[in-house]
Structure formats: structure tokens, C-alpha cells
Length: 397
Ligand SMILES: Cc1ncc(COP(=O)(O)O)c(C=O)c1O
Image (cartoon, rainbow, N blue to C red; front, side):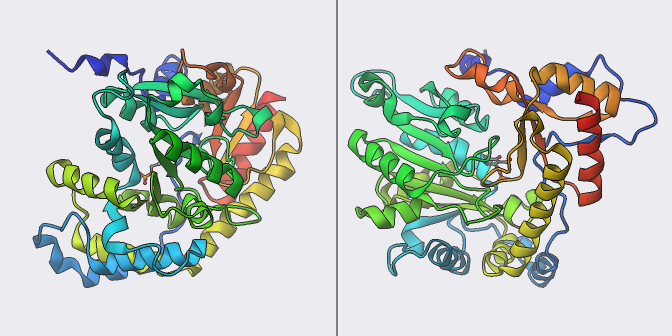
């Protein structure tokens, strides 16, 4: 009776984690700390509540799915500033759409670009492995074959999409990349992005670059795919980027993001969204526009993460393969067996972490790459983070 494609999906990582820990009890006498979920717990910018309050009368209006000119202009200005884009490259009316958190839109975009057949065969969607699980759900729901490309330590955790067989490349309708990557924190440089954009144009697939962690970094701001488009020429063809306020502004509950890119894809996406998407409420659009125009809260937020990476470095040193990731807020630590470590940390230290295995596709190429790891989200305040990482070190060494 139900859509049989759903049965192809493995349980979502947090369900798998609940199942793993269900038979166990957390260590007694210690306050439980969960570092499994990438949910920012930093203070929310005060601007948010101010604008929501000013605009509260607008909840009685159905929001326009394309957002407001103010929202699109604010996003366009941010993209231009952040990625030093040439004037006129981004036309906010044609190239930008608000989305109610990027997860729903990353999922839905597959419905736009997956045809019934490509090169006379079943279309394929490629993604890294390990990876953010939404991508595989999108591929399966759209009827495409998910293709997993290992993201391994030896290649800097950046998948080699160009190395796929020609027969697979010609069936690709979409490639997902996250940069900075969840879970490994790897950042694709401009050369990598340019090569991937060229590949997308040569094989006519859509390259989706998920850049929601791009404002959380240690040294240099991670480059973006639109910046690579500007260097390459050819406009925004075959490229879309996704950005979110969830991490940049620590407001995961606001459900506010945007996508930007290829005008022809955006047009079809807007068409699909007019049937099935939740519009972003007008007060949220106004608050989001204000947040995209404001940078000081982002710098404060980034500094809090940087402090926690320093704490992590001082506690972990070079144990567990610790390295400061180029971007994002996760530690991706080699503990030998991620599931066993997660159980031990929970029952002996009341600490919840995510086994790396749950960020992989079990039977996909590259799945073994996740097994030795756990993912730790540095989303709490500095004191909680310190306490958690000390427990981690003391339990596993
Ligand atoms: C890589 C990646 N992309 C997208 C998202 C979705 O973020 P949101 O829906 O809050 O914008 C997340 C959330 O954790 C993520 O880790």
C-alpha cells in the first residue's frame, strides 16, 4: 500500500543511535551531555526577537513562496559581499529563493532535476560517503540510483567525483557536496570546485553545494561554489548553493535558509514549490533579511566555536586523530570502533556521541570509512564542552 521506495531507506542516524543506546543506562551521578545532534546552543541574536515582534501582525497573511524583494536583496548583498562576486552576476529575482530550512529544499531539489531516464538509463545521484543523510533520502525518493563516492582521510575527505566511471557520469542528474563537510569539516578549495563545475557542465548534471557551515571556520573563510562560477565564467549554469541561518546565526528552530543558482533550475524549483512547499512566514522573512545583513553576531558566534576548538585541542592533543577541521563545528574522531565507543561513553560517562557509521550508507562504496569514527558536535557552551571532552578522553584512554 505504501511507496516501496521508503523501504529502501535505512533508519535515520538518530533513530539508530536511540536503538543502540536503548538497552543501556547512562552513567549514574553525572549530568548527561549529548553531543550527537548538530543543534547550535549559542545565544540567539537579539535582533531576531526585535524584528519578529515588529512584524507580528503579518502572521495573518499567506507568505509569498518566492519571499519578499527585501529578503532576496539582503541575501544577494550577502552573497556579493561574502564571495566578492562581480556586480550583476546574481539577480535576486531570478537566482534566489527562500527555503524553510535547507533540509527540506535539499531533499526537494532532487524532484526537479531527476528525469525518467538519462542517457537511456536509470538516472543517478552522487554523494560523498560518509555524508549528510538527507541526500540519500532525496535520491531514493526521486527514483534515482544513489552513488556513493568515498570521502576518505587520504583524499582530504573530499570525494573524487571525476573518478567515477564514464557510464555512471553520463547517468548523473545531481551531485551533492557539503563544504564545509558534515561530518569531517573538509573544505573544498576553488580549484576543486571549478573542476567539479566543469564536470557538471560536461555531463549536464546539477551540482548542489551545501554550504550551511560556511561561516564557522578557524582561519580563512571557506570559498563557495558561486565564487568558483565567477572565476570560471558561464554564469550560474548547473550550480546551486544552499545556505542556512541555523548555524550562522544559531537559530535552528527558525527554519530559515535560501538557495541560489542556475536560473532555469530555480524556475522549475519555484514551480514545484508552489505545489508542495511551506512558505516562510513574512515576519520570519523580515527577521531573516535583517540577520543576513548583520555580521557582528556571526563573528561573535564564530569566536565561540573557535574557543571550543582550542579547548578540544588542549584536551585531546593528537589523540584520536584530532585535527582542527577547516570548517563547521564537528569533531570527527577515530576511536577504533565508533559504535562500541558510543556505548561505552554513554554507560560510563553519560555522554552521547554519534557513531560515524550512522553517517554512511551501509552497503555503499566508502561505508567502512565511517566505522572507526564518532562525530561530536561542539554546540554547547565552553564549560559543558570542556567537561564533555574531558569525560571523553578519560573514558577512552
Ligand atoms: C550538511 C547539512 N546540510 C543541511 C542541514 C540542514 O540545516 P537546516 O535545515 O537547519 O538549514 C544540516 C543540518 O544539520 C547539515 O548538517
